[in-house]
Image (cartoon, rainbow, N blue to C red):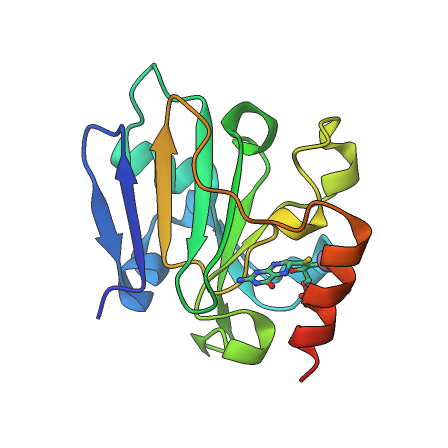
Amino acid sequence: MPTLTIDGDVASPATFSFDDLAALDQSMQVVDVSRIDPKRQGDAVTLAGLLSRVQPKPSVKYITLHASKDDFHASIPLEAVQDRAMLIYRLEGGPLPEKAGGPVRFYIPDFAACHTAEVDECANVKFVDRIELTAERGHDNRPQDEKQHAALHENESQ
Ligand SMILES: Nc1nc2c(c(=O)[nH]1)N[C@H]1C(S)=C(S)[C@@H](COP(=O)(O)O)O[C@H]1N2
Ligand SMILES: [Mo]
């Protein structure tokens, strides 16, 4: 069952199951993300590794993270995250559970250091099932002010 689709302006659109992600080269694997952020658990693959599989066209400037499960979408400049972002997909040998944002969650370590207001904690999209690469900014429905943000978190805890 495909867990993650990567498409848009890429030479080779691809889908990845849990097994496909786990089979990616060792150089693309990040074992135990708690070493990077003690609040996070599990294993990840690097965004750079996944992008090397699909080959974004030179025109690509934006990466859009789509979570169809709860209709949450974030579109951010690729340059700000391409060398550091990862996708957490595994916990204790199995798929990342939903309560941890699985089966796949986007994670930008040290998001405050990205130096662009477009990349914030809200861009750590949970339940990502599609990554789209485009020249222009894609669909983004992250909260735009503190009131919307508070309402989103209110929903999360229900
Ligand atoms: N799919 C999805 N991803 C999401 C959100 C959401 O509502 N849906 N909320 C975002 C916000 S506002 C925050 S602060 C973080 C919270 O992640 P955490 O629950 O793992 O701390 O997830 C982000 N990713
Ligand atoms: Mo948030």
